[in-house]
Length: 253
Image 1 (cartoon, rainbow, N blue to C red):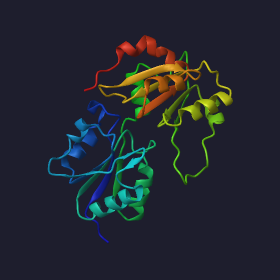
Image 2: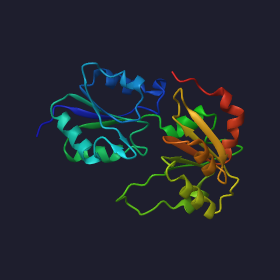
Image 3: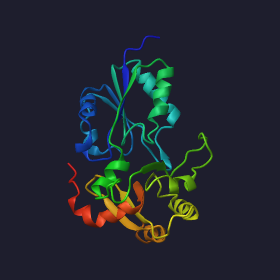
């Protein structure tokens, strides 16, 4: 079957519209169809061509607008009748965004597809909190890991023991719900209870919040102030730089 359209998997970045790439913005402005995720900020949605068909496919914990299989089929269907279809995803499509899965489905269906990377929240949120993930005096390595594992994945569980000793900075996506388990596993693997940890919620947005603690205290702190998702966790000595650098944070656009 001959398809007339092309699908672009576009990363919207973490929230600040100023972090949207020029290529992504240009595609939104000329798109015929935009299928977007829940965490895409209203300012970025405002960049979409007013004539475009806009479809909310957002997935949040316990509130799935569309199952993943239906999203892929929807993209295939729209590409058969529209010239430019944008799949707009928070952060970067290939960093815990299931962009690779969607691209596979599109390729198998014979649909032309291209990825437009975005700035991932695991880098941007700590930066806006004054936490450099690497620093010559504190960390020369970073591990990015999901704190929310899906059912039916390629392996049964994250090896938190290996993660604990694999690098000097650990960045956990989607880890608030499982934070007690994650902290317990890292301590069992040998990380000191005094290891610094920062939680950054709504990173790069005007309402960004940080919660700073240690592995020994953070679960109680979260419960005490009802600190919720969406948030990134940063674990390691670089968190100590927050006190020095947080005053230099960028202002959201």
